[in-house]
Structure formats: structure tokens, C-alpha cells
Length: 246
Image (cartoon, rainbow, N blue to C red; front, side, top):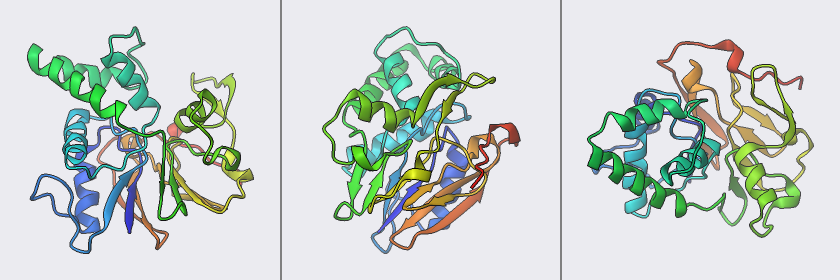
């Protein structure tokens, strides 16, 4: 039994609210459920929001205990490239995480970046759970790529979705609605594209309900296929949400 949490983006207070609503205790330092349920994440725990480092420390603690199920997203990848010393643009949310890092003492900053590199390098591209009936992939996964060997194609889709190569007027990449044509048997739980309500389409569920943009932080309960949400504490930015025609 899993509780799969959508894109957090540094909204640590909302994460604690959601864990409490789901019945988890953090007395041991990591989320523990009295019924043995497990937490999983669709990625992008950091960037944009106010408390990325607190989210990261919780993820590190879960990883140290061998209890982390986390599918990395595009923001995770960009922060990893920054942590390695690559020249990446500090925009689209990375600048908020870097500002938090820069507020740390020099040695603590270096330790945090080193720990983040370790964190990222231990993550699989996506997770197949419950006898492969459930797949957690940050931006989704089309039927033809399920189980395919790791490749640039798989990595790009999992991190960024079905991008067309075109750019929207606000600078975001154009993303095709891959879920509309998905007809696979496994359920794909993903995030990446903010929607005002969890979107069920065929055997896919988008649970990025735009917490950092003033929406909600949402979890999908598996195998129940029920969603649980808590309200965001961030300012509402309606222009950040995608509205699908069907």
C-alpha cells in the first residue's frame, strides 16, 4: 500500500500537513504509518518554494533508512548538474534553492551539495511497484518505453514529458498530452504539469496540483486510487495551471 505524493517544490509545511492528514508520524525522523503504508514521490521536491532544504533533509533521512521511493524530476536533475559544478542557469526556481544554500556556512553548503549528489545518483529513473502494476515516473512514461533499457529517450521523457521541441510564449516547453493516447495496463502516476485537480486519464493519474503555485499538495492512495489533498500556503497563480480539453 502506497501514498504517492505530487510535486512538492519546497513546500515543506504543506508536506507535513499532508503526511499528518494521511496518518503518518515523524517521531522517528521519517514518515511511519501505523498500517504499514509506504510513502512515494513523483519528484521535484525542491526549487521555487520556500523550504527546499528542509524537504531535501527529509528525503536524505528516508534514503539513509532505505525507505525512499522517489522518481527524480527535471528540477532534481538541474540541481544535480549545479551540485556537480556545471554551468546551469539559475532560473525557473533553481535560484530559490541556491539562495537557501548560499545562506549556509561554507562547509555546511559543501556538505549539502555533496549529499545531494549522492542522493541523486542512487535514484532510478522511475519505479515499478506492486508486481509492475504501478509505475511512478515524474513526467510520465508511454507504453512503448515501459521496461525499455535506460536511454536518452527514456530519460528525456521521464524528466520532461512528451516535449515537442517548441517553446510557449512564457518560455515553457510545449508538452503534448501523452496520457490521452496511453492504453497500457500498468497505472502511471506522475506530476510535472500543474493541474487544478488530479487528472485521471486511462490508466494514468497526474497528481501535480500546483502546490507551489497556490493550488494543493496531493497524494494518490494505492491501490485504492483515492486522492487526498491539503491546501497550499503559497500565493495563487492561475496562469501556471494547464487546462486540458478532455
